[in-house]
Length: 422
Ligand code: GDP
Ligand code: IMO
Ligand code: MG
Image (cartoon, rainbow, N blue to C red; front, side, top):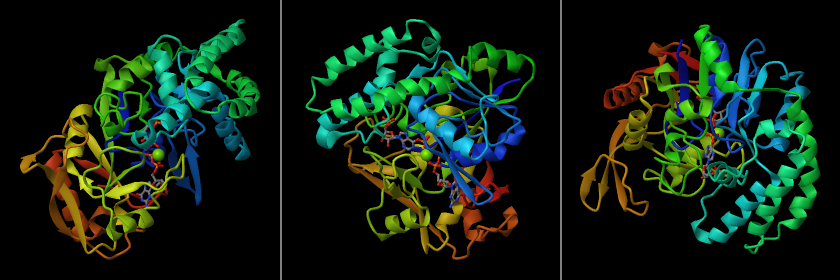
């Protein structure tokens, strides 16, 4: 048995949460392999919207197992908040949510360092979600970090104090008043470790490989998007993990020869939160209409998302990096009502037509667009592919032809049911 992978092919928020929830019935286990509470994965059923941050999006299917893998970074306090929200809905996840002992811990001082470092960057800030992601992965790679398994060791508090002292030394290098925030949250953070301890803390690499050998089916759920990958995104305006398919191997301990399908989630247009290049960004009323119709405000931070047309240069790059085998196209309904829909097919960089993402973040890029006729009808209740407006089907045909990848599902609304098999 091979592990299937689902991930975002743009700048995050493509609708991964909705699609994972939708296809969870096809799997026994859903596993997150990277990222942390910077993610906000929304899904909707029975008219209720749920937003998950590090809990995999299979959690609303009680018979399935969910795993938080070693590549994820966990803030115990925000984890407790997520667990408490589920409890309010009578969902007790202590039995079917397992956590890798090797996942790294986000300390309160990691969050404060994130804030201090962003503030120090001024205008060149990354636009981090300020969840402590960068500093936690920095400590991981720098071999200073603390892991979930450490909370079970007798001298954990000693280890915690030692790392905290190092962070305070660093925090003192910034003009940042961290003390009140630290005093406010530190005890809550320490108390929240008790919630973490209620869960099965496992050597997930052994468990996942055992499951695969027993023909148990697993879906790896990505967070962020390919253009936020620390190696391949628009560095430094990226997150601190490998969001691409390769991240599954290191983030769950699965060998490349055991990876299977790669489902790429693509929004029918583009959005980005935070700073960094976004060649097709629209600053006019069309961009405003995308934001309004698509409710494009961050699931984690509430920030307005930057909006623009679909970018095939970026999409083809993401398909190449991930070996995408099928695409799920989301938010097609948001394009209803536009007279004209555009797709970027290449970039004009100082008069040269290129089909690659330039290295230089400051390159002056003029998108080359192909124009499509829009449609007016509301498509949110349509259940059959053939009943979608011809203009949308033409748009979809064009994307398939250009990318050479099949679109398997078209999503036409946030609800689980608003999904059309193609
Ligand atoms: P994720 O981070 O990739 O899981 O995506 P987010 O949850 O951050 O953002 C996607 C947003 O679009 C959420 O509010 C979803 O409820 C919503 N959504 C997902 N699919 C669709 C769709 O097909 N149509 C519409 N209108 N909304 C969708
Ligand atoms: P999901 O999983 C969209 C962006 C931030 C910022 C950059 C670095 O919901 O798609 P970080 O907090 O990681 O240091 O922020 O990455 N970012 C996301 N944008 N969706 C996400 O996750 C994101 N996670 C991080 O806005 O630009
Ligand atoms: Mg999101």
